[in-house]
Image (cartoon, rainbow, N blue to C red; front, top):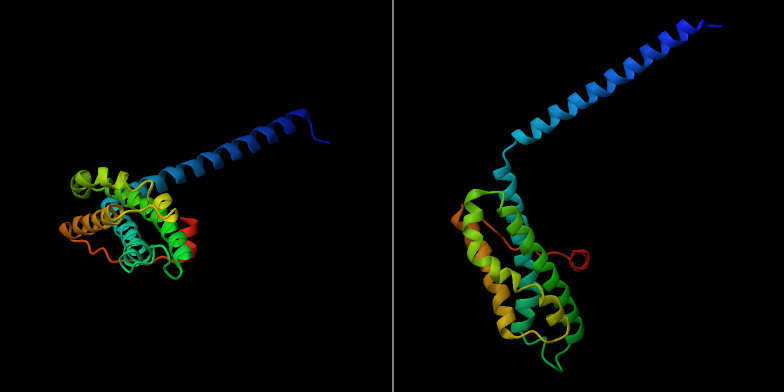
Length: 176
């Protein structure tokens, strides 16, 4: 059997080893945090902006603008109900992606300055999904979607970024 002194000494050594191990891990976390902070956040913000703006552009064109202009939302049109459901999902998805693009652009000084004029227009997209799925969207609503998306593309182009339409799947619309 060990003496009480040996047990206490073993306990102190174990506690010190655990403490030093935790301290070493915390030190590594600080190092990795510093490494993350040293990365260029501007490039990351621009990449996110391009991604989200492209998804908004693709969804809005494929499931809102194009079917609206083709008359698929009008009463009696073949596949109207399904087109309205997809448009409703696309409207909500587009609003979400526009907001994400704006949020990403706020991480870049040049992009954030250029976004001021379209923020109010982007906010008007909030109820678009419900209007579309209910068959209550007007030409002005569709034009507003196009205007916001075109503005995002233009802001990207002014900052040397090419925003291309990225068409999400119907599954992505439903999960967005």
